[in-house]
Amino acid sequence: MDEQTRIELEAAAFRRLQQHLMQDRTDVQNIDMMNLAGFCRNCLSRWYQEAANARGIDMTKDEGREAFYGMTMAEWKANYQTDASTEQQADFKAAFEANVGKDG
Image (cartoon, rainbow, N blue to C red):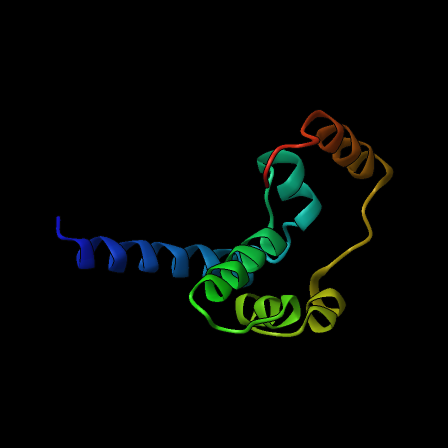
C-alpha cells in the first residue's frame, strides 16, 4: 500500500471513530472511556490539537475540543454529560494512580 492510501485510510478510520463517539454513542461518558480504555474524547481532541500545533497550526485546547466535538465543551456538557457516580470516580482515581507517569 502506498503512503497516501495509508494516510487516507487512517483519516477515514479516525472520522468514523469521531462519528461513533460524537453521534452514535453520546450515552457513553468520558469517565467510562477513561476507566475502560485509558483515553476519552478529550484525549482525542488534545491529540488533534497537538498534531495541528506540530504542523505549525496555532490551535488552543478549546479550539481542538470544538474541532473534535463539533461544538463547544459547554454545549457538549449541557447536552450529553452526566455527573460521575462515586464508583466511576473511584475507578478513575485507581486507574490514574496505577498509571501515574505514563503518557495518555
